Length: 104
Image 1: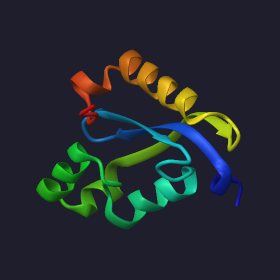
Image 2: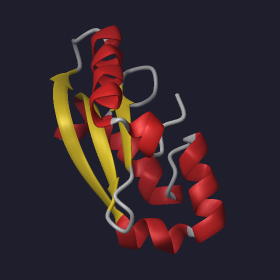
Image 3: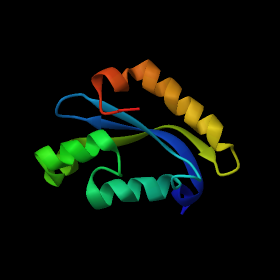
Image 4: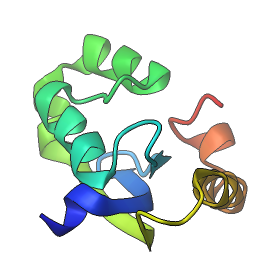
């Protein structure tokens, strides 16, 4: 129930190849429980690079090799722009655009 009302910046690690994906959960795209439920359902959560990965390697690959972590969590009252700014910072810091699964 707590995740249902949490905004967050999260990290998905591909434990097979070390690639990273940084994502965010906001009121605009679904709070943390909703976002992670999307990944459980389809393996990609609607993300461009992850959709390609699931098509190429299959949903089983994601289930076997993806690890989910919370980098920062926030209560529902924090402005979405703060969360999105922190997501961008983590993308830059972890180089998940250059060497991972972030396309944006």
